[in-house]
Length: 177
Length: 177
Image (tube, rainbow over the protein chains, first blue to last red):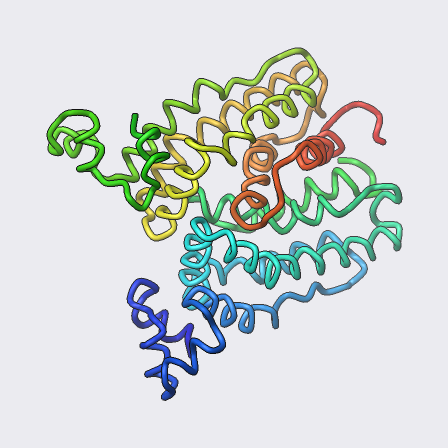
């Protein structure tokens, strides 16, 4: 509901009053649960997005990473998630508490599920046994944000393939190309 | 001058009028060169920062990357660059033209100098001969922005080492650890 409203009126036109009106409740009802518009939006984003965060496990970690990144990337460039997520990230640049919440409530979950998937691959012998995979999980989750937030290039199949290729070249046990 | 003023009054308190007053010129003089506050700040950032963008070439590409990242990272967390750069990035999230300018005027330069440095290493036999290094250059420049913009973790020596280790594990010709 909040995300639909954001799509209709734009992030700049959005406020707690408008959300309350749309929901048919008093604005204090909204304020009781969410201290700010950004917190409310973050919550709405998490609910829509976390349904889509699970990696498959086909036994081919490279393919599973690629599949998940290609499945989630389009959301970044489309309403309702794209513009609202961008606005929350912008807001978080002048609000360290929101930044902490954004990481803790949302991105840490993504990093953890990525870490879990590649750790399973390591146990299965697909990745080198002695590699510490905590930072590589962050690289897998974080690198393409640079492209999204700081350039005009799309998160396309070529970018996703290049990222997964680099990860597999670094840690894969298969023959090095 | 603009960055000093931004540090004193904060990004929110900054406007073209204040900059003009500080510079002792009319505001039209400022507007003639910079269409917006963000454009002016981007220009000021570029001037301060580009002096520091050159990679060393000691013949050890891993060490040179590490050195450059560790040298530039503190700027992100300190005034004048840190908060102003963060504010410009935030502004760019609702302004695609500013985002394009930010990439073209500043980040593309960083990506290119990174690409040049690792391409020299490839020619010197430090990196595998057949690797396409364009995307890896973007990973080297971009990955740590995730940490800076979307988490509360610092860009510390451990993060820099981990990133360079991953890059060298993927493309280095040295023995794989």
